[in-house]
Amino acid sequence: MNTFDEIVAADRRVEPRDDMPDGYRRTMVRQIAQHAHSEIIGMQPEGDWITRAPSLRRKAILLAKVQDEAGHGLYLYSAAETLGVERTDLTERLISGRQKYSSIFNYPALSYADVGVIGWLVDGAAICNQVPLCRSSYGPYARAMIRICKEESFHQRQGYELLMTMMRGTRAQQEAVQNAVDRWWWPSLMMFGPPDADSPNTAQSMAWKIKRHTNDELRQRFVDMTVPQADRLGVRLPDPELRWNAERGHHDFGTPDWDELRRVISGGGHCNAERIERRRAAHENGAWVREAAEAYAAKHGRERRA
Ligand code: FAQ
View 1 (tube, rainbow, N blue to C red):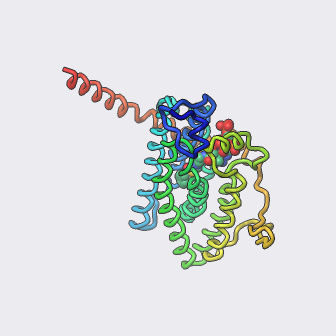
View 2 (tube, rainbow, N blue to C red):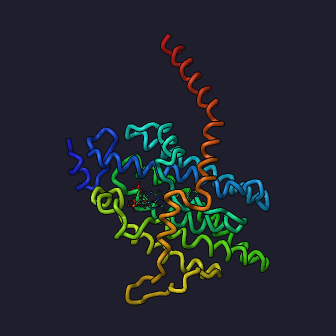
View 3 (cartoon, rainbow, N blue to C red):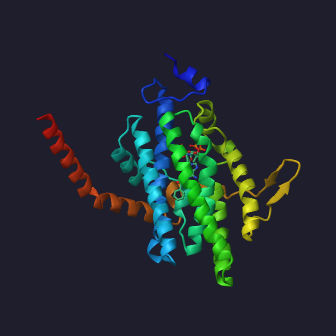
């Protein structure tokens, strides 16, 4: 039998029944739970636009995307449960503010262009962060990421296609796209977390091969990937310091407002209270479904045992 250290050193996957350090288990529960909460809370900004989609086609696409996010959340809660925690407990921790979710979902989606920009930038950043997580050391999480990344790619494409369509439209549509890009650009860069020097978890998570790249490395990758897409789209990224640096072979870019990230993470963002309140209400309104499912399972369990 291999020890935890041997499995990690050999770049193999840690599985639920393997021995693992308490800190590793705690870190995995923290990251997977925060990720699951982000998917579930992340349904809200775009979900607000389902009833106002401009055509049947756009509505079908958006419905499918938001349903995918729900699926990702459930999938991730199941991965967390392999570590010995209960989904109901994780939900409690989310709605009581004891567990975090991504800062990005505390910004409002103000127009239909925001749906496109969320797909392009937010799902784009999510893919950049999550593709390396397909090689994360915890087996159930890494495997969940493979499927999730495939669906996120569709989400990113639908966003970009929506924006392409709007950019070929009227002046008002083009302005709406630029306005949405101006509002979502910096928050998207913040999705990768604090700068490496202020990231308390990165070193240990890299040593355990949970994270494969640092926050700053992934942020740089995202900027390099997105700049040519913005050019093709015909939008301006709102950063006067953004320019190609031939020496580094990367784009230089400005510094995100880290005070804003700290404020949003600690509950002071535009929509934090609203997002949690809505999640709490949905959880309470769903109590009867959970009770019915438990009663059904208990009844059929009794029948099977009889
Ligand atoms: N927001 O030491 P680090 C999606 C917290 S994608 C909130 O650097 P770590 C798809 C961090 O948790 C979004 N909190 O931490 C979608 C830690 O807190 P703690 C979700 C943040 O873990 C698209 C503290 O700050 N993706 O949902 C943020 O090494 C469209 C110190 O930070 C994932 O969760 C933030 N932006 O690195 C859905 C990906 N940044 O618990 C709908 C998996 C940091 O120590 C629509 N997670 N924090 O007090 C990860 O890759 C990592 O957890 C990071 C943070 C990179 C997010």
